[in-house]
Length: 75
Image 1: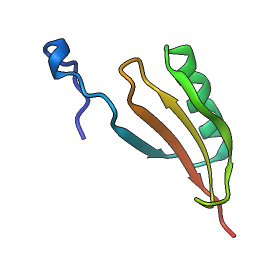
Image 2 (image 1 turned 180 degrees about the horizontal axis):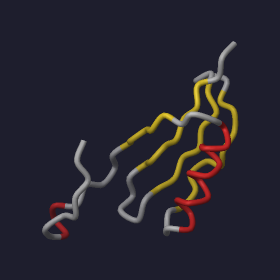
Image 3 (image 1 turned 90 degrees about the vertical axis):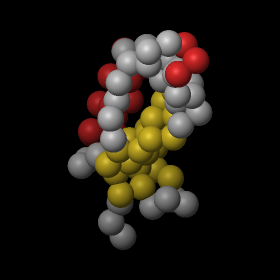
């Protein structure tokens, strides 16, 4: 994956959903806090999602992309 600045407004990606694996729940919490501090908007604060068997947080970046941090929970 490559993250680059778009050459012009028409080339900006919007509506993508990108998920990153987090090693711990604390890492998910830190991701959420850092994303908000950097100008992101919370979609879902960190919490357990039983349907995913994971602890996740979701934010929208300034261009409207959905960025997720996910920590898989062991059963």
